[in-house]
Length: 78
Image (cartoon, rainbow, N blue to C red; front, side, top):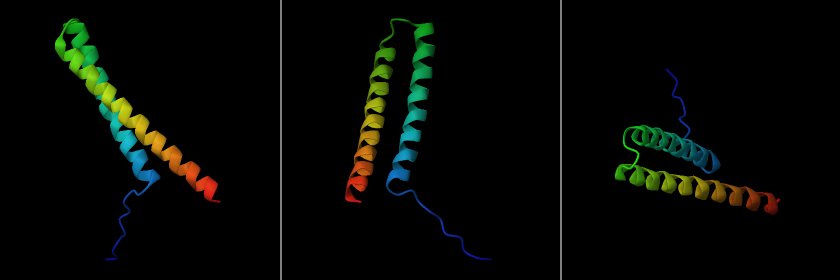
C-alpha cells in the first residue's frame, strides 16, 4: 500500500478555509437570533448573539483584508 501525502492549507488556501468556517458560524448565529427574536423580541440573549455575530463579521473582514494585502504584495513583487 502506497503512502499518500496529506496537504494542509497554507497561506491563502488556509484563509479561505478559515473564512468559510467563520461564515458557517455566522450563519448559525443569525439563525439563532431569528429564532430568539420570534420567541422573545426583547430578550437580552439576542443582544449577546448580535455582538458575537459582529465579532465574527469583523474577523472575516480582517482575514479578507490580509489576504488581499498578500495578493497585492505578490503582484507588486513581480
